[in-house]
Length: 298
Length: 313
Image (cartoon, rainbow over all chains, first blue to last red; front, side, top):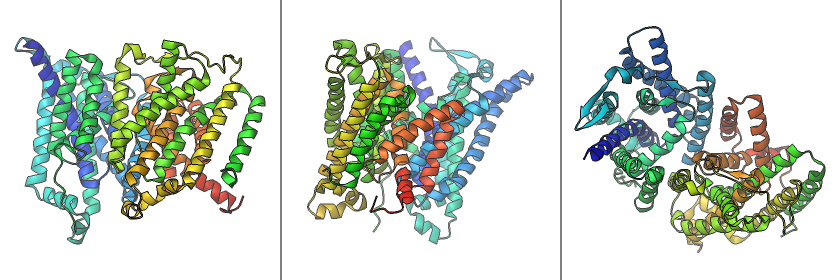
């Protein structure tokens, strides 16, 4: 019973963090049709920025509670700066090119951004445990869990509801859906599509950064951080269906819980399970389990 | 097969390189061994790239080739160069042929992603399995040639060059056959190819299998050149990315391109790493972006431009 609860909570926690990162990836893909390998770098940048400043603030004797502010600020700063530079500087000039070529360009960006991290932050790992220590831990059904990890589930829920609200209840969401449905028609109806693209990319980047920034206190922030995350989020969006928020949520739940089961019951298959599921879904339902139905254009 | 310019150039170049290698210092011989080993995989990816397909997972076959050598070595003690090479090619080729049945129905990013998924499955298995060397991998004993164990790396270097030559000639020949000429046709318009009476699925399946055999050979030769295998530098998705990187760097223009591109890559990487160990990926990434933006035909298009006369030389 306790083991099952541990698996469930671990799985939910892992799913939550996967969801935050993948939501950004899937939004960018849904609107712009860009499979963004550099998304892993947004995550890594978010983690590094947050860890760096949490450490600095703590050294200066400021209250640890500021850590939460830093996490949100780090995500926004990283997302806005990197997202803006990359979209305006590189991707904007590639929209007419082949989809696959854009993937390759983002891979080039990924390599560049990974190294700028090394140059900016060095190779030594960062530990930003303060926010986690602040929240302490609780007893839950006989097991001890740290509260910080559980707040992750709440953050993911907020992100999910936020995305849903933005897409379905605001004017912006309507515009976005129009662009997704038919870009050219959107332009001719007077939608400022370049602006929509820029904002979407920045929004996605912020989510990538938030995933990294929020997870930073629970891990040692070290080089190579983004490499694993990006393939994991690929797995999530593929399983759920590329370009769908609901898909990203379900994909993260499936991958997160499967991985938690594997970690606890059969650690040898931990990575294997994730990618085997991804491969199986691609083989039998390439559009993903919950891909939005595509309108057929005449 | 031997009477076009590319073939003549290849034969001449291979001769010069083999003779030159005898007098070249060790580090140059090493650069060529790594470069030409990798070039085989690039040659295969080039065939796919001409069809408009990019695989972000050929490290799967590269890794299979390398691990075939490693496992034959550690479990059975096979050290013969040709047996090892055959093993790598056969293992990767059979896997590629079987997976090709699925892969031939996929295009664009789905093709890229499915390949990634499959390569990461292998990565996941190898990393977590003690008997497959886990994250440390294996050291590989020195290769022997028909029972003789050479003292220098020169014989292996000659063999790699000759394997490269054979593969380049074969692919060059293949691209001139009707099935080979379908490469660009498929990229441009699949439906028309079908109307002409060819099966696109069969053509892609063949190309895919060719590319996997070549990637397997590349992995096997790379394992022998390096003397070790490990999952991080043989199977992880970043390796697949590296292979694609060199393919784009080389350009799809000619079968010579992968060899030049791979050498440039080796040199670039060595120097970038020596000059700025913290920033070599940055240099590679920036080069990659520059190529995508300003030189879509890769290094080969530069050579063509410098040569000026495309149809002579």
